[in-house]
Length: 399
Ligand SMILES: Cc1ncc(COP(=O)(O)O)c(C=O)c1O
Image (cartoon, rainbow, N blue to C red; front, top):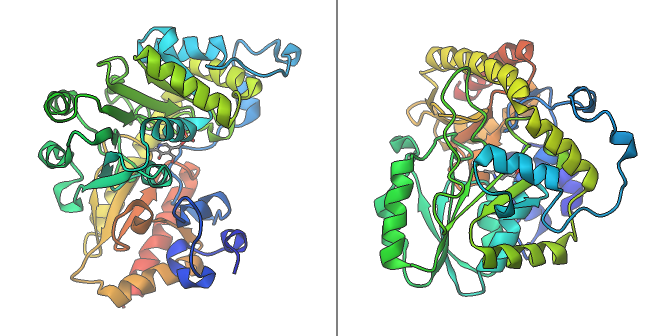
């Protein structure tokens, strides 16, 4: 069976048999997270974004009154000035340090390909967003994984990162908050890591993926961006998650080092030439007006997280969970005293019968006993029914 056919099938990844498509010959590893682009079940608890913003909501924001006059030429090599200014403002860095990218995804790819040559080492904190690993593998880097355990609440482990650093290390890649867990890394931990990098791999860069940073709950404090904190730090983020506009395909890197910046801009030119000027102008308006857009989304996320907390308490005989610090996502685990391996596969097979969709832990380098639950994507009135459907699936699988 062709992979394109598979992606169109209305199946949960873990229900598929990878032997269906024989030996995978792609330069990048195959990962079933691609199904998220093609499958959208009524109780979609697999998505990591908050609710999708509509174009109408965006066009109603101030500053877009003359959008019809926009000339549809190429954008600038580093991105539209309005966009870079809005990012610079949000991240508190000079505008020159911002390179616009098509989503954080392109930033991740450009950085990896520019910095890591075959044989170079990269230290990757997992479980992680699959392209964070797969772009490194596609670039031919040797990936040294530091897997954070569920039982330790996915807290960063600086000692274990340190044990993997060497003069061959070119890149250290982490996300804060992490995908799939929504767990954040503190500034103290990053500062400690920078000191260790000084000793073991002074040439290495530290990539911090901040795609979920602003998806906070209610009035929770928003962690400052790590942008500009150190010459060796590159951050990446986008309008995709907290602001609900992944379809704009607009993100950015912040890069202090001017030499690296120009190498990345040339890499971008060789990949996509420039961003879409339309997307960039829309994203700039969204960022300029982000406080209003984020306020209502944060209220919704806080309510959804409260609802999920109560549900998790009620289902504690079946599942354990790690409460996230930010992001519309978190990790739950099927309890091993209730679900043996057969019951775990039964659970995944049952999901379509309950109109349910979840992110399998296996996408992120975790076990299939763990799943990512996205609690911010469904409209509020659909979350309760979706969680009830999940309760039914748990009950049936455990029986
Ligand atoms: C940690 C992380 N980084 C990057 C991305 C890519 O998102 P985008 O390219 O839409 O910014 C994702 C998407 O799920 C993600 O979870």
